[in-house]
Length: 253
Image 1 (tube, rainbow, N blue to C red):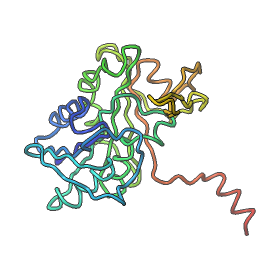
Image 2 (image 1 turned 120 degrees about the horizontal axis):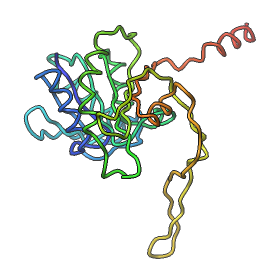
Image 3 (image 1 turned 180 degrees about the vertical axis):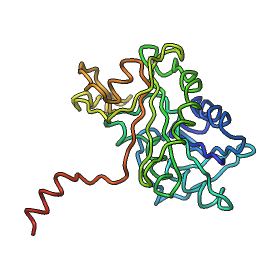
């Protein structure tokens, strides 16, 4: 089985090393094609106005000056053109990708692109807590990732669907269970604009995240992560709201 590994945190991200460890527990035919720099939050963007630069880091390891979507396309249409991968793994992201994170995430986008190109794709993310971005327990994902992927590979997944896996912020032995979940929904009040001043007194701004208290819905990815569960969420490429489509079809006829 040929596995393509990618991410949105960049070619030197520790989560990518964790992902390669997971992939090599499944196969010895593993390729890594990842962004040259951190591309977190770029979603499903393509580099249309800038050329892509490809750099071979080492055997089967490549860096692309572009987005996660660019990386998947580069791998499929250039590096692995002789034989496409059987599986695409994206991650392990530094931080959870749950609820509306799915809309922003480059990690998810790489799995979406892989799915669009006809390859089974799985996104993996590791939540972190009070310890912050420099204390992410990637060993939790490493410990549980191979078994979860093996099980997923035995299941029938629709052609235009992908899988979003999130690991909780805990030690591997503290994981309570692995559960199938719905995509959750936060109160978007947690988004804010942080205004600052440069050395000349001019304003500049950061998109920031305020702390907010909310109770995640039971059975959602948010609930799972908060309760030391590994969250497995199937996602579809088709965004169509079927019930509303039926209503519109009745109104516009």
